[in-house]
Image 1: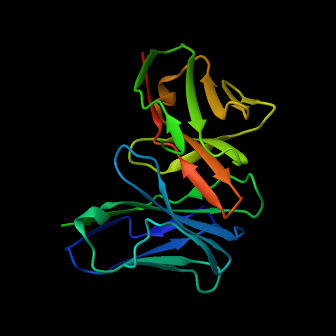
Image 2: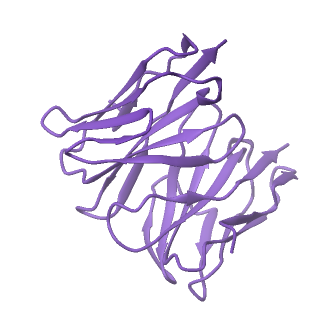
Length: 114
Length: 111
């Protein structure tokens, strides 16, 4: 296990289409996070899982966004009816249990909505 | 006011210089603090955790002032390879889990 993997690396989609991204965290890590980052900004929190339970969702996460982590391992983030404002880098991170543990990020999925 | 604020820079310094970055946070209940480094078009990577007693890792020193809600990162003897964006990160666990990233401070180290 070499780290957090995200797939695809890049996605170009037409406005109105649905897209799904996948994240495979570090296997020993129980916690998984999704963030979104746009140019010149820090990552913005979207949602957080502890094992298979989705414990937090940001207000940024509209009804068009849904995330799952069905078996407590990999996670998917789906965006329905994409809009141009959804264009961003979508970052997945994982961490071990316990306060004070930093995250390990994947390389991200860069989404471009045209 | 943003929950985590950083000077966006950029900081342009010569090799060998000492440079300091500051970060302020608004949530007094915050409990964990970190500095991350992000290279252009790459993912953030954990640089160091920040402890109340302050901590040092080679040329990097991080300090936390809870009373002033202020975090700092000092880089001594800057290298060209230190050029990156440095992100301040604050986590709180009260009323739900919340981790906030600052917008980052850009550093350019010149030969």
